Image (cartoon, rainbow, N blue to C red; front, side):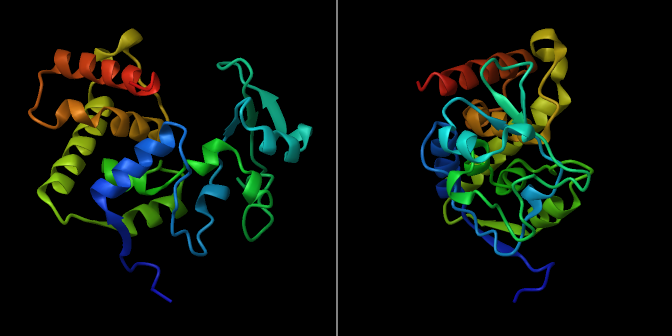
Amino acid sequence: MLPETAPLPAGNFSDWLRAMRRALSGGAGMDVACGECVGCCTSSYFIKLRPGDTGALQHVPREHLAASRDEPGTMIMGYDSAGHCPMFDGRGCSIYSHRPETCRTYDCRIFTAAGMQAGPERTVINQRVARWQFAYPTESDLAEQRAVKAAAAFLRQHPVRFPNGRIPSRPADIAVLAVKSYGVFMDNTPDDADAASGIIAACRAFDAGA
């Protein structure tokens, strides 16, 4: 067994990036080498269950769900006093084969890719994030990670450039936006206004399947 501080192979960066973008587009979930780590199940996450999560909605008891105030038709599953998902059985997910899309696409390597942590209160995940180590067999792998990091840094540093002067507050949401819009930073460093408008356009095109 590797020591808890030993590097963990995260795969070739460009391959991971393509898989992550496919997952975010509604493709297959991410294949993460979690091992014995259950950080995402025990770190006080609110989990979205959307109308398409029919299997999860059938297996999560109604008392664990509340209607989302921001997304009509979406339900939110909270966590217990210990920060554990109610579907966590002490070893892992008790409904793993029926887990919602939010869980299928969750991959803590996204924080490593974006050069950021999962949040100050998510110690277990941050320890995992620090251990992931991507490989860069080509210059494209290096260039794409630089671009993802640049997009994430811009989002955090320039919220006033976006509508209503706001960006998502959750680190996971910021990292996802960076993965969706990294292309804005691939060939050059745009000025602030162009970067913001480029990120907005790239995310809209990604969500529209363009």
